[in-house]
Amino acid sequence: MTHAIRIHQYGGPEVLSWEAVSIGNPAAGQVKLRHTAVGLNFIDVYQRTGLYPLGDFPQTLGMEAAGIVEAVGEGVEGLSPGDRVAYAMVLGAYSSERLIDADKLIKLPDSINDETAAAMMLQGMTARYLLKNSYPVQRGDTVLLMAAAGGVGTILSQWARHLGATVIGCVGSKEKADLAHAQGCHHTILYAEEDVAARVRDITGGEGVAAVYDSVGQATLISSLDSLRPTGTFVSFGNASGPITDFNLGLLAQKGSLYVQRPTLGTYVRNRALLTESAEDLIDVVAQGIVKVHIGQRYALSDVAQAHKDLEARKTTGATVLLP
Image (cartoon, rainbow, N blue to C red):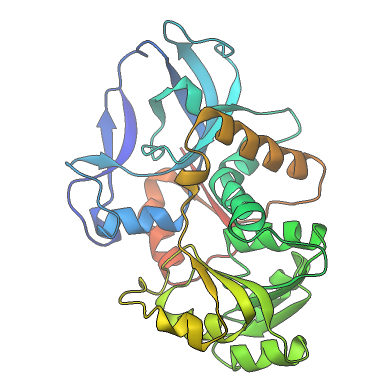
């Protein structure tokens, strides 16, 4: 027997239950994986509340982790017991052990420890597609990043700066502004105290930014649109303040012939070739020290309900790691 955090209904953090489960042996194409560190992400909250429906209950939450291969099923090539691996975008990470398809796993180099791997896979590959696919950042661009002190934000700001962009980060407190500066932001704006779009215009000499990367959602929609230059790109990749609904496409014309995208990481890692390309790019910049993964807090996996509360209250900074 092993243990996992499961839910039997949608709801608040109180629906997260630490339970004994049996997982059996790996089938063909699978491995048995012992988790050493698990990542916490806002998608976990969306799934817990039912914003992103999961299907039949019970369900084990969690979308990324690192661990050690314990056994391999028939037909698995390139992986052996003892290998260190990580993955993202596979439901069921809130567990001590699990079965998982081998083609979802990425081998880890010795230069990246397990906690860093668990903290970086989902958020780091998200930062990668935002910077290289949603709006491909060019040297000399200025971009605006909402929630700049969060997990994706601290990775994206460093990576964008390395690509030659000027990064403006929006944060919720002076302490988070200090962290955002340390993680690569050239300028910071306090959401609650400043007019975001006015500050952006001031910083950019009236032009606006090439792109806004926004994981906050409803609360920052208009500020994001008003911060863009003509033909700029608004990328909405999260709903921390609530989902954007009934979006008026006419706003895009009124505010400068803008572009908008609502992407998800799953699209950009939808097959093995794309997953490998994305993961190897991320591993490369982390191994070189171009991107440093900031782990702001750690919790026991069994205490994940408190981690969810802190994440929703915006008390966390950088990445959060859950330890089985």
